[in-house]
Image (cartoon, rainbow, N blue to C red; front, side):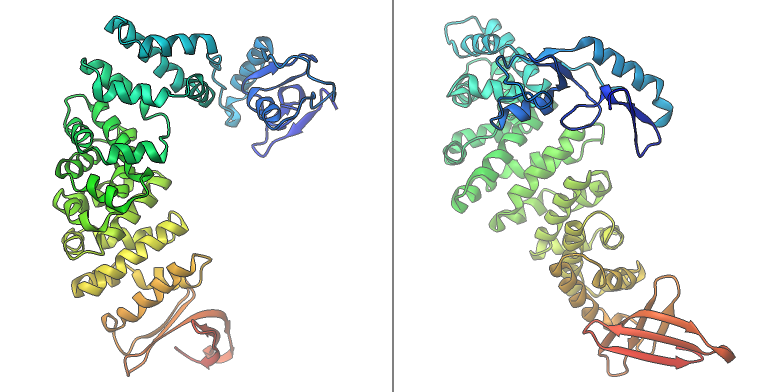
Length: 453
């Protein structure tokens, strides 16, 4: 009922009137509709966009879809957030108002006008980019304001006389997805691809990042293997993309764009050797700990791709941190990351006995046994089983043991065949005996009783 308080997991209570009636979450941008009810902007916009024409609370018909910001309620919510910051509540930022459609159309007209002064066009581009940064809704508004907005920006990027116009247009262009036909047209134009590759060595760091972003959009959005190979075959592209990943972590966007571009390029098998020649393996290992989850998955997928060619495998094997890092990552980041790490280890250990010894020394046995018994992907489990069989000669042939910490039982038979068991139950019996019930990877169940195992 109104005025009541609802408990939160954090131990703090949110006043009822601070919650959006649709999402039941704390409102971040409260707006009032024509019926007088207040909702969070994102929730009511989603409600209307799905075809609803009534007020969710009163069920009255919405005769006017104008959303009026409720500044008083927003300030009250912000004050409440500040008062409860000791409970981990963060103050909601003051939302920026959506762009005016008339203003967006005017800015686009000024941008596309070849006869307009260069400074006017440049300022229009900058204002459009700022609006696009503010919200997804603004980006959608800009994209829908003109049926050929991407073509306008593309023409400026590659045809404008002034470099600052080109660079500003590029920065705005990479905020929008390109159609497959547009990606194919760019990929097939070697002059334009060469121009983007030259921008990867530009003095401006932002220009380099934006150039890499457009290259990634083009390669990922092109369905033709021949066109993707044509783009990735340009020598300077790999050097420029890998160089972005060398920058300090104070540039998180560079890491994100860099790994997206490198992964897209390495999907082309014919040119992976160029990534190795650009020192991608060493940079990937050095930067692996700096990536966020999604980017870490891409980085590990790229590592596995490069390990599939001899040059890449040798480069990763030559880095002292590769194997320990991959072993440590198993079961740490995500199922996908685990699968990629296991695949890379399988490739490395298949080619190098030294990598096998390093993996065993880093504790890969425990990691792989846990992986086999986890809820990870079937492909990850198959790779783990293959790796266990591959590494059997790297462990003492007569070792038999139980680990109380991990519940693992490993029996290396004298014939060299590896049998791995998972401890289900372990009971202490009188006279120091132990009763262990274990099951093997193939589903067999065994019971053991004795004084030691």
